[in-house]
Image (tube, rainbow over all chains, first blue to last red; front, top):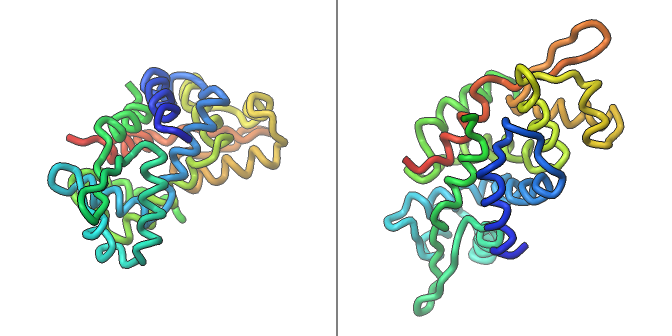
Length: 115
Length: 115
């Protein structure tokens, strides 16, 4: 799933919250994919660590110890969160940095908001 | 997972949004379990159909045709949504009715809200 697809999904979900009308088949499939990215304890912790870091950004080098997993496993989880549109990745020097994509969580919140 | 456990989780996540501080291990495990209930297209559609029905309630007899699955499969998905704290179940006559649990989606929305 590309970033563009995620952007499209997010835009549509903002206008059709779950409580207002039945979710169309295509949106349900896309949203289930997004939810799957969050349906893992390690990924939720990684996302919350990045999101609560200064500037909503963290070096992968600072993410390994807190979750207690190997670097390849952490990188795998970060890749899934990036592909789902929650994080963006940039390389500076030796390390990769992950930042919270602005609005990504807001769009999810909007989906579950009744009003 | 019991309803009580879900209530406890929801209460704690409302006060510790994902962007404010790293999610503790136990909360991450519980939230991942909740997310897993939503990480399926059929369950998302069922939840949205119930949520957008009059009175946020629907008879299981009206949920089978829209999702195009067998009754046992629909009942299985509804059970997962009920155990995750999103729906409540009541039996009236021959049929089971499912209702959106008040506040369940709001608590999820609060978790993803930045402010």
